[in-house]
Structure formats: structure tokens, C-alpha cells
Image (tube, rainbow, N blue to C red; front, side, top):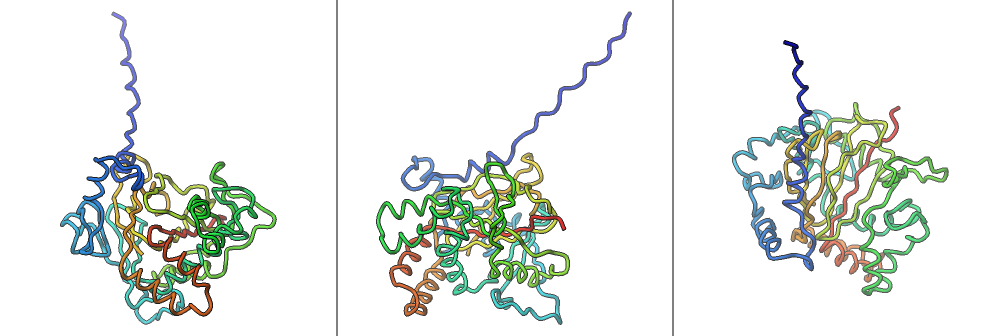
Length: 337
């Protein structure tokens, strides 16, 4: 009898384990919630006592975590002894550095930027990085001049239309331009360099974490503006030539849930609370409207300190925006040289 070779097994179906977790935490803002979403929000949102949901890992309050979560967190020493930290943006005295088992390469640095400095950087992002020349290419337009007065219009002529225009801004570029549609960096002839304070921030992060000898200075940055209720879908940062140098990410303002996944969407992501890894999928499915009382007080103190130099209307706009928004500045190396 003729023999018949066994038919090849069908290829295994890849299971997307990132997307269900992302949908689990996502919501669409206060005006679009159904009853199920409102119940979910009551379960997730933070009270004055800390995290409500033990399923979200929180390195800011280790005691609030489940036994399983606490076992995954490792505290990493900061600046090596005998090598004092010399930064002027960050402060090592109250800082702590953590790694999470299952996510090699992800490091979470907390309490390194003093609160007054956080408020100062939030104002800088709103005032400078949201406009020409720092905006470069934003999600609103490829015409830089069109975004020149977005923030100024908000505090000089506050109203529904000016606030709506500014809150439509979701991201902007600083340094090397990035085209989100084509997912590539552009060689723009008049490209402004990465502002020196952002280069210094990257260097100080590398120094305080003991990575200064193995990491290169950043060339490009993306500034994300997250009003409460918005999100960023899961993605992988893989458009850079240099896929080894770490991305430095600074977050300011309200709290969010951050998902850290793996090298494919088949890895179940870990949800992390982030307050005031290079080849992995990650995303922000939930930006809350919860702002710490310490950050609110820092904004009030900052306003009093600079009241003679900054228009009171702009300081008021800063407090209004940051009360229900989150700013993220992420900086990276593009060229592999």
C-alpha cells in the first residue's frame, strides 16, 4: 500500500495577551462612561490612603502590594559609594531605583526630581515644548507656526475654544523629528537640536543610576500630553537605529497605569502605577484625574515664588491643566554611532 506522509501541522496561532489587559484598564473619560466603566473606575482609582486595586503594582508604596507583587520588586543601589552625585536637576537623597522580575531592562527611578523642579518642568513643557520651534511636528499639523500660540492663547484668552485647541495637542517632538505616520525619523535641514536641559536630564539619570559609562547622550524626544481619560495604545519603540541605548522617560502630573509587556504581544503585561525597557511592548491604558496633594502644594508654592516674574494668568492656567493632566517626556538616542 502506498505510504502517505503526515500532513504538516498548522502554524500555531499567536495569542495577543497584551490587548485584553489594555482594554481591561481603559476608559474613555468622565463624559463617556457607562455603568460598568464607572464601577470599574471606583475599583481602580486611588484614594488618599494609596492604591485601591492590589492587582496594579506600585513601587511608590510597596506595603500596599500583594505578596506576589512585592516578591517581584528588587531595589537597586543608586550612585556607587565613594562616587558622589553631582547633578543639579535630580537629587539622590530621597531617590530609589527598582527592577521588576520578568521585565529585564525596565528600571523605575522614583523621588529623584524634587517637586518644585517637577512643577518648573511641567510649565516648561506647556510653555516651550508645545510651540515652535520646539514643537517641530505635532499631531495637530506639520506647519510649525500653526502651534506657536496654543499655550499663550489659553492663559491670555481663556475660554472653551482656546482650551479645546490646546487639549487637542497629544504629542510634540523636541530634537530629531519623528513622523508617526511613516514611523521614521526625518533629516530636516533646520532641525533644532535637543534642548540642553533635556540632554542634561538624560546625563543625570545615567549618572544617578550608575549607567553613565555605557550609555550615550540623547538626540530626540517626544513630549506626550495626556488629559485625564486619554490613553496611549500598546506599541514598541523600534524606529531608532540604536536599539541598545535606553529610553529615559520623565512623567509629571496625575497618576496613570502603565503596562510593561514583552518582546511580543504574547507576553502578559504587568500593570504599574506611575506617579509624579527598550524592545518591549508598552502602553498607557489609563490616565486618572488623581493628582497628589504634594504636587498641588508644590504648584501653589511655585506660583508664589515666581509671581513677580510669571503672569498670574499663566500660573492659573498651569494649575488648571495639571490638575487633570499628565505630561511625559521621553528621550532617546537615534543614530547607532
